[in-house]
Image 1 (tube, rainbow, N blue to C red):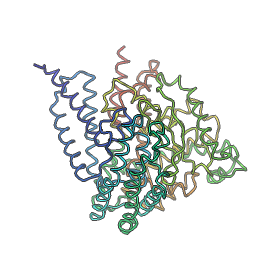
Image 2: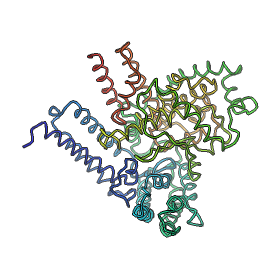
Image 3: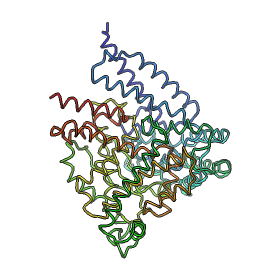
Image 4: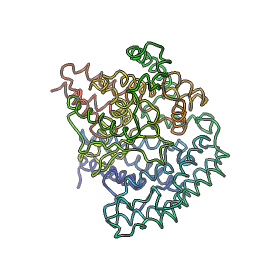
Length: 564
């Protein structure tokens, strides 16, 4: 017979296992990130039935968690228990959002992302893998029917995407409709030629019969049925139940119990603070006003060093920056991931809707990838190259995510669930660490570092302005133009992003501010005992946790150090 302690431990482990298995079923392709593949021929499922099943599972999981005797758990297990409880709560808030009615946009969901995710994370090492990949392709057409049903439900409820996002989705669909299926980005035959026994057309039938028809169907739906109903207002403001929905998005992405108004005020203060630093940085390289300096940054004659000679120089430049960063890691970190970050170009099919760069995690056998959007590097000065590499690669996303995935002592559930504010906060904090690492000795790179921080501060103001205050699109663009050197086209792209992923833009600054707050606390409490490498180890141990869990972890570490 199990003791109370054993029983509680067994219940906790069983709950962790069940939640992990449930998540892998929801995200069968992304399971490859974690080196497992329990549903090798499955893909996404946007059906209302799947959504309702997910909701029922979370309710049952919450009830199971409540029945576990916390006092019978070890101290380590109590931390695991609190993570599970908070993860369930974080996931449950999405049901106050427009989850079913807005299953995708030009920035998220399976319509713009499926090709990149499917080709990167589907295992392609055996003939059986290839057969499963082909089965996945054949399911695409039918699964997008469920996606369309969700959008139709949104039309009925008057909850639709902005016109601009729909137009970009239309463009994204067109990019996947090719005359020759051999040219499809879903065709991986060239990557697996040695396994095909000469059959280079192994995937062509599935692409002709499922993939291309799927995107043609989506294109027809968006152009002829959905676009006339697309909302003409940029934010959620004014949609049925928008206040409850936006609060849920804020909670999901920040993990904090703050209102949009409170975050708006934090943003305004940060904008004011960073503006003063930008003025100081500008004065070291330019005599005119900040507005004049922002314009001058795009003048190749005044600042030739700020531009790439051609697009062939972009990837090698980022590789050199990463090499420099790697040489400066030891004073701040005592752990390094198994793989260095790969730097590659974003697929051309995604260039029109993606930002300057994104990070795609690796798997247990492949490195993660920093993906640069070459189309945005054609005329843009490269003053943010150092900050961007610190954020996306090392010690930012690649470093943090890789270490979390490589930790064999961490339960899989803690690798699957990600707190946006932790992940993006760490990325922005990593940009700040570049100052301590000596990565901003070039005054233009330092100014660029401040500019991208200003961009994150403005996001607090603009995101809350759009969704909680009813700001117009033009007002948001004007505010960002007032503080950034970005061309108006890029600012417009940024604001379009905030319109369709409510709350996500808040994660960066809110997470970074929390990490900095905790470092100040630990430094003050520990004095000479403070070890920044140990501080970073504690932060990076145990996965991407909600910010209040991170607060508990750091305070517990401080208490342990003081007790020594």
